[in-house]
Length: 217
Image 1: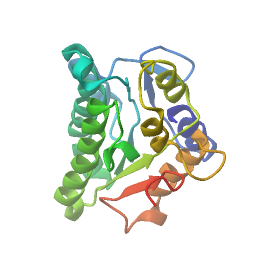
Image 2: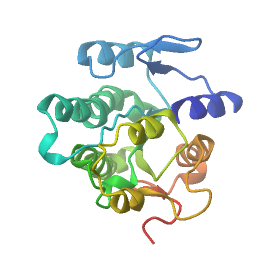
Image 3: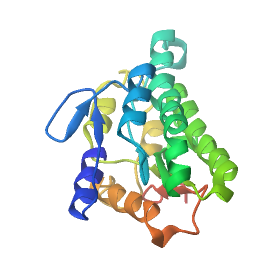
């Protein structure tokens, strides 16, 4: 999703600063859970018109078998890092009347079996987005959250490959989009992000924008 959004924004003429754990062309290497490093990067490269928090991890498993290391890692990447980044970027966003788009998940608004930590972090980022949206609305900063269902990405494919062998697949299938072909493409999510980040969405803030193929109908 980050890669697709990067490509879309650049095709529209935006100057994009992308961050990933691994350095690549047009990508700065930084671990979002390294608070001093990511704060320094945000403050040294900003201010921004648009901030996008897309980094995320998910590991499915029986709740009784989740280790604290796994729990803490998901909280660090999916919830703490976006907060730290938004906190560092907000002064510049206020100055430029910019906006934030965070990536939530359908798992943040409905139960998803075998993913207690992921459910908790995605519910957290949705409500964090709403709270910050309300707090800074009168200062000209919009904050929205895109909540995808299944997406054809390496993250989703990797999660499926690590499912425990004794899970109830009927429960797992509840996370699969109703509309064919069952998963969205990253470019669809990028289009939604671009809309929310644009002036066309100037009246939209605090939204949890669902792209879930009818899962929650």
